[in-house]
Image (cartoon, rainbow, N blue to C red):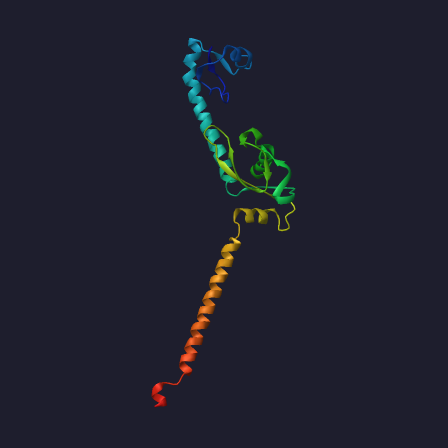
Length: 205
């Protein structure tokens, strides 16, 4: 059945689109809810007008969402949770948790369905999570899950995950190199001292 969308229906069509849809979907959902109308000649004539209006609305909406993205990407979203052995969580962090924390940062509610989290997070760490704010604004943000009882505080714990210290082995290698250089230097000094203390053959003669 061919219909014209008078409202944007995510996954189906944007306002002003003329599309073929399943008859049952149209009769039982789109038409009763006023989301679409049958694609009569008159409706099709209005389609371009609706598409222009929808494009303008989408432009304004995208600009708003982009300001939200800028605020969310200034710093990572830090979520403190109870942690057990080996960094595993008591429970998990899901898209509702991330939406709630993001909403606190933004000062407005964010629908959990806009958080594209494949599966719940069950381990402390840094995660890249995609948001679907609009068809044109789908950024990735950093989510850092840390122990809420960290003695240094959440921000310090998150910073350690984002900027881990140098590898211990590398530090040991550097120390060994410094010790080796020190030993070589001492050996050179000892040889030089011994050479200065030996009497020359000319003096003996």
